[in-house]
Length: 243
Image (cartoon, rainbow, N blue to C red):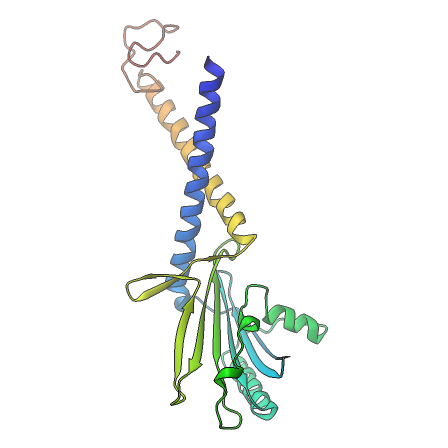
């Protein structure tokens, strides 16, 4: 009868630490989202992506904790090239490190990671009559450590007056804040295992330290009941734990 109880207890612990891993992954990502503007940018690069007669100018900014891509559409190549040059001038002025690439395909793969969503946005219905004006803007944001685990997006379309109206996607709204809530795989699983394992290690270390402290004080290592006057090999009269 003892083995099923032990198995049930271990399964309960695994589920508990898995849930803790998920909660800590969200807490880590939301904390990073809250303070990302204070963290130093490590790298930045930009490029132009042409797709379905749409010209996208994509700028990726990255540090160890978070990464974002800002994407704008243009109706003329000349305006897009000018925007790209402006972006790279800002990059040099602020001293952002630009990663080195051997080919344009490598540059595009770095600037446009799989979690970006701008390719799924069709800006053509929002075309403005002015030549070179952008049709929409997309901000993709990924955050988490040790891997990017959560993301959200802001798609901004112009209204008839030409003002951009933001639409939040993949987020949880808490008051004025829109926290990322779209899981990124395999980063979400990696962080869940990492933080769940860290919680398990800390819980085990605490239990061992508490048991050792109780043993030094002459108490039961399980419940803390005083074992003074009780034979060393006898079970605890309070909880039945072995010596």
